[in-house]
Length: 261
Image (cartoon, rainbow, N blue to C red; front, side):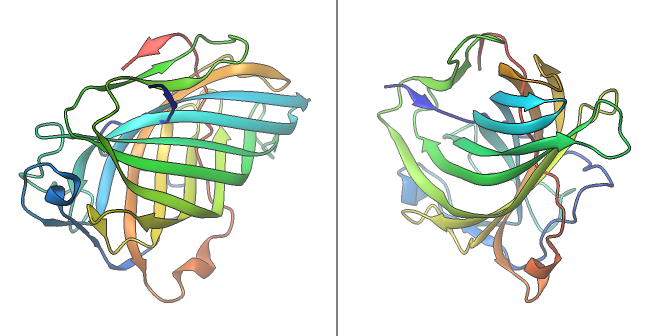
């Protein structure tokens, strides 16, 4: 079975100063591995590290136009109560893998004051998160510039368990900055846990940076490739924090060459 996806692998990173601050969470999430059929005791987490790969199609003239994105990735480390502090004995990448798939659409325009820079603003974004009980799911991206390319899951996915879905976009934006760490992203999504593996999460707040870009231009292109990494906070936001969304940054993944992870 093949499924379009987003790739996330865990590693913490220092988020660029230009990113929106992550939403302050009044209550972090509870993670219960046994609810997904894998061994492990419940624990509390405030952040999860990830890495991803995505393919982007863009229709634009001089940097102004529309885009769609398709991607996937693996999560790796849980952190609590803050980003520098890892949670021990979570079982992730030992007893199970955890990954996500995503797709989105939006508009793109030149970034003011940054020659060659682009700002992508999301109009739609959907994500699903899975636990891979046998740790045998892979993620494969089609080649850079390949017509109708996709990011898909391979391996054996019949044992994978859906543990959460996003149910609406609050705000999302990404930037491509030539020569400046390839850009960054920030996205906030309504999130609904499924099946009890995750509980307490109502908002998913993704922050991160692009590691590399290929096939990305100011004009039209197909299957541009991005990969990158970051972290997500999941939880119940503190009162008033959703009023601070403003002009967040969200990663527009684009780098492409056939890759299996």
